[in-house]
Amino acid sequence: MTAAQQTGLVVAAHGRHLIVESADGSHRLCHLRGKKTEAVVGDRVRWAISGDEGVVEALEPRRNLLWRQDEWRSKAFAANLDRILVLVAGEPMFSESQLTRALVAAAHAGIDTVIGLNKTDLPAADTARERLAPYRAMGVPVVELALKARPAESLAALQPLLASRTTLVLGPSGAGKSTLINRAVPGADAQVGEISQALGTGRHTTTSTRWYWLTGRNGALIDSPGFQAFGLHHVPATDLASLMPDLAPHLGGCRFYNCTHRHEPGCALRAAAERGVIAPSRWRLYGELFDELSAPQRY
Ligand SMILES: Nc1nc2c(ncn2[C@@H]2O[C@H](COP(=O)(O)OP(=O)(O)OP(=O)(O)O)[C@@H](O)[C@H]2O)c(=O)[nH]1
Ligand SMILES: [Zn+2]
Image (cartoon, rainbow, N blue to C red; front, side, top):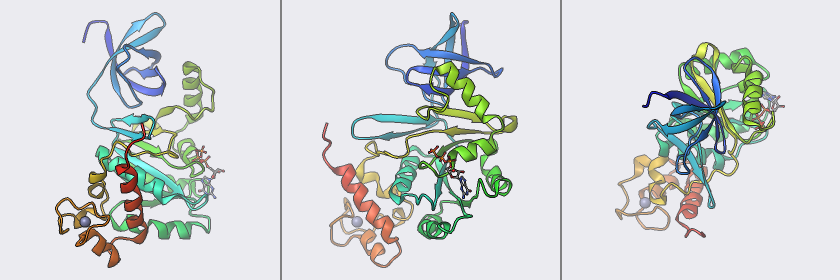
């Protein structure tokens, strides 16, 4: 590190514009030097003052990086995460495909996941709970929440999971992400306002990812848009089963060592699905995702 360099944490990113937070809590608008580097929220960077702004000169090595890759472009969500909280609800009813994609991407990046079932005050929560049964059974913790109807109780349930960790919050539109941030982060609106102003984006834009400190800096939440098109093209199709905790235990039992578990005879995973050990919805999603990931790329 040269004398002029300082270290900082990326707390917001919008294209090549970043907000970097220094150890004293101050924020500065920074730009990335060079075309090759790409920084995301959660990155630790080295930067130098350049007039009123700053230039990010290097990224510290990342512990992990969650990203999605669609057919046409890849997008990094955030780096150096301890956990991903996937927020879902019965109304609007969550998509099991999106949930599974998020869990596979997290497993691929080596990041723990927890599911938050929000809006448990609504009758549709019963169906949502049933749809989550296979996920509970495979060991993904499911926390029941009613962030608007019973905020204190919900935050108390989340507190042990969020404390002293960096948690990325993902979830479909309407699941309650903003409600969570506003309840868990006093002054979240002010933080957003300050950052949007610095980045020159609209106050309510949802196109950028942001870091929020929890009270006393005892952990942080990262809010990120982009759950809808959760492409997994960075995951090799042949790795998919090993990234699905309900399928993985059956690997190694197939007749063919290179079984794709799609059409081969003597497939141990198919046998498990037929016995009902693997839930029908999960087996169907495996097939859909495998075919998607193994299809020839169109670009
Ligand atoms: N009944 C009920 N409604 C809730 C609960 N939590 C949030 N809501 C409502 O659900 C709606 C969506 O919540 P948001 O927090 O805006 O959801 P979001 O995930 O941020 O959605 P986007 O901003 O579109 O990404 C709002 O009208 C909330 O008031 C809850 O526990 N129970
Ligand atoms: Zn097989």
